[in-house]
Length: 288
Length: 288
Image (cartoon, rainbow over all chains, first blue to last red):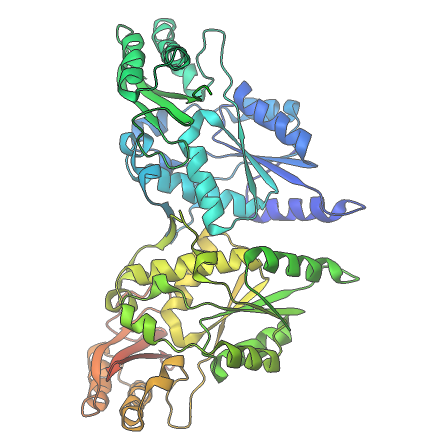
């Protein structure tokens, strides 16, 4: 496995991949990450490995998508360990650029997706600059690699949808693939931020997936009212040491609010446990 | 020469160009236009023709870069004639999409370049949405073709610089080439909008290049003061039936104001003649 630090080296390395094969072009799969790899990331790599000839992972903690300097500073960084994990999961090429490589002096361009998709939930909670930061860095990473496929986790459902919208709108020739959320035994969705939780905080955090399960069960029992389904979630969340930021049920494509779950809808939760902000979601699919 | 209307057809056509050659990849050159072709566009095609194996021209009157509905409605459209001119100049493939092809329902993404570059001159005169419209459509067109080289006229100097900034910042793998402004015998820069001028309006319009020539002469005579050089231009412009919008001398990279022409600087003029808005510019290069 090779590690490159600049877009120039990256393109050179990909050039030999693409022209090296004896017949036809090699398919390239990409897994963009902010490092601090866990099984969730590695499951994306394994899917990419199965569907492509070459797998590129980017590791870049993108400063422009962090609203709070403290959150950026606290974000776990462990490159040596990440590189080992990436290699063992089957990555061929790691792209780990510096901030100056991605945002050189004079950089002045942003990619902006407008509408509810970037304004509600994470867009409201983390500030309007968050998804501009995401859309800009993902477009840069995709354009640096020009992969056939790029793999994102359903855990960051809104980010995934913003990336899909941006990629489709600009016509970046990459297929965006959504992969299922991985969970620990207590139900908590795998996240790099989980490493920052104490044991008691972790017990509180596990109420988030429990709330999603309770909502799914209530829907299965026939309740399609969003106000009542949200109350079901809130009842589970209350009592844990959680500072709940939102419990929302929205259209999974546009992120517009819905009143009744008559079509598939996304139930999304954000909450703070101590200083750690966690998000999770599940797709609600009504019966019949 | 082939004409395609959709990104899908365009990519199919380019795929066969790129894989059709017996040795190595064919170099693709692109000339983005809004149609109403004149010799200025055709000179871009000839440069592209000399430097590439395949020349693609896009013809698309981009609604999002027009501030005024009347300006958009009046913009000359003559596709049949454009297609003939393109073919005679050596274009291999014309991409002439509909508005719905470029901005389908649900489209929500914009590319924004910030700073003086998009805020002054044309950014101030045509509104802040103008360069967002330019940056967004040019990124879409470049991503649809992924050309090795794309050709723009120096006549739209600020647009050229916005496109260079955006392409560099996002890492679109295309070299942006700047080509000199072509002029008629009376000095007027070739522009699709010239077709809208009456004979008397045209006489007034020709004061714009005369003003640029006067500024160049004053600089050559040793005057490097921007306020005095602007006064030289204004003296030429006054008296014609011109509504002058700006006469500015700026840094050619950042478009920040300068006070003295001690390094190369761009002198740019915008003026209305009747209902027609014209722009022109020249690079001022101090002696020594």
